[in-house]
Image (cartoon, rainbow, N blue to C red; front, side, top):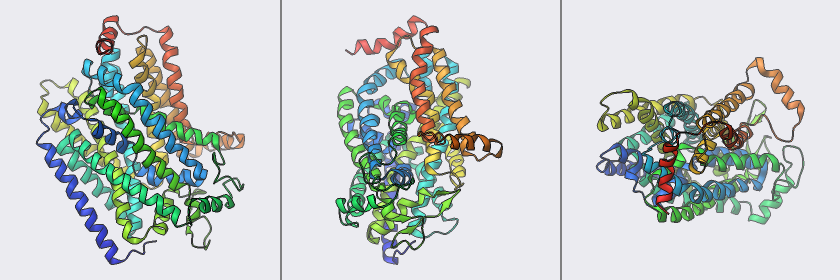
Length: 534
């Protein structure tokens, strides 16, 4: 698939070298200003609106969206996949800033919580909640990280024709790069790099979308061409329509990728670190515009993959997409589109675009995971655990987390979207209700938190074993579900994750209504921060 000239490849290498140098320089610069665990984990809780908004957006969107989700959902839903990006902007970016941003900042600052598990401990007066949630964070951030590496390796494999083991080398190189600047500067390095990477993402997405449409003679002609192509059910006229061939399952994608941000530790932690309430209001606007461009643009671009890709060999000038277990290899679709739609000289821009999106996400994931493991599992069990020692241990766990993620990412059997869906489903399915109601509902109980944790994990793990791991013992169950012909795809890990999140929002108030809330002084102390700031 790679026809890049030597000159184009050389230009791409030069762009990459400059990019890497800037990343490392920012890490070195911020390392001199990172003096404590509060600096390392939260940037001293003094991060402004622009850095917070870009950090939120670049953590949100990575190679998972640009390579994995854009390809899969663009193939399945056509241009209606753009609704996913719109949902990400409004439900995933705008609403959480205004709904939970202020309360999260005030309450976590007042009770001294640096991580989501520590929030659960101090809001619900439960050391056990902290331990359990910390384990959930560490375990289920790993597949998400692996999915980001997977997307990166797909793109680099296309550009540089690296052969069978080339993707593995790229994954390792990216792990080392992300580890270097996060270990050096912690949250400050991450936030500054996110801002720089966000600028690249905005320029890159706008360029790619424009060229994708231009290559097919403009928007109207491209949509008309899409409507001629049959969808997965053999119907025509749906892939270019407003709501696409399958609105119900499209809604599941919107819910998973949008509502999920409200309960993800790497996302809500941005509100812990933001400077003040004015920064929250500005950040909401900036973050929403960023999401409209990056997420909306990615899914809009993905909506046209069928004009560039085909499951049939020798189908005009379309790239042939192979199948695995009877399904198209979705993760190869966007790289194939880019190869055909973009001139070689711009491939370097796309490489840096995806690298920027991915490294910004990776840095937040590894920082969240290592901070949680050190602050919430190790520190409470070690006497005389100094600030300096804690920072050292966090850096060690950054390396451990990345090594495990790299091992998983090197297994190509799991698709990008599957890895990410199970990660988000488990994390937000467990945490969304407890975190959200903990900010608003004084009667929210510890038992309700446990119920949500248990339900979210059970749904995720059960779905994984029954439907995604191809275990022979469960083949009868899988076939029975297929034979049901339910309009909602019950085999989809995306729908399972969305269901877990909705159930979390239902379970917490119900269980809290008949179980005991934490002691009054604990609850009053947490909510006093909100009343005092009015």
